[in-house]
Amino acid sequence: GKYVIYHRIPPHIWVCYSDDLIGWYDHNIMMTPEEEWEFFKIGAGPPPIKTEKGWLFIYHGVSRDQRYRLGFAFLDLEDPRKVIYRHTGPILEAKEKWELEGMVPNVVFTCGAVLKDGEVFVYYGGGDTRIGVATAPLTEFFKLAGL
Image (cartoon, rainbow, N blue to C red; front, top):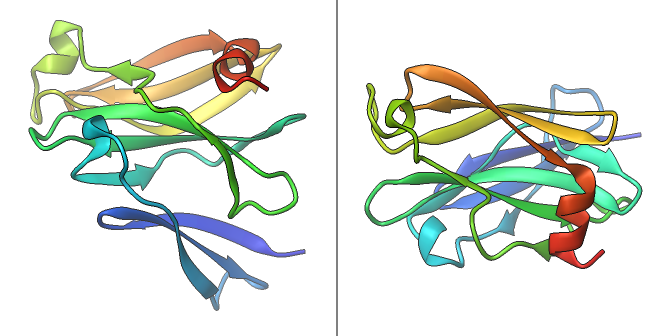
C-alpha cells in the first residue's frame, strides 16, 4: 500500500516511499555508478515494468565524456529497493546521426517504456532533438539476466 519513487541526486539513483504522494520518507541510495559507461552519473528512466521475474528497471548512465546510454536492471517484486540483476553494459547508445547530433549530442534518454504482447517498447530522445522508439522481446531481457 505504499508509493515508490526513483529519482536522481547525482551521481546515484535514489528510492523513497510515500503513503499519500505528499510526504516522502526512507530516502536511500538504490544504485550507484559501477561501469565506465555510467561512471559520471546514473538516473532513473521510465516507471519500472512489472514482469513475472521482477520489475524491469531501465535507467540512463553518463560516461566521463558525457555520452548518455541506457542500461537495465531487475528489481525484486516484493522489495523494489533490491536489485536482483544489473546488466553491466548499455542496451542502447547513440549511433544514428540524429542521436549523435542535435541540441545535446551523443544522447539517448528515456522517460517512457511499455510492455505490449511480450515486446518492450522504449521511447527515447536522441540528441535532445528527436524522439525514437527501440523494441526488444521481454524474453531477451530475461535471457541477458539469466532469469
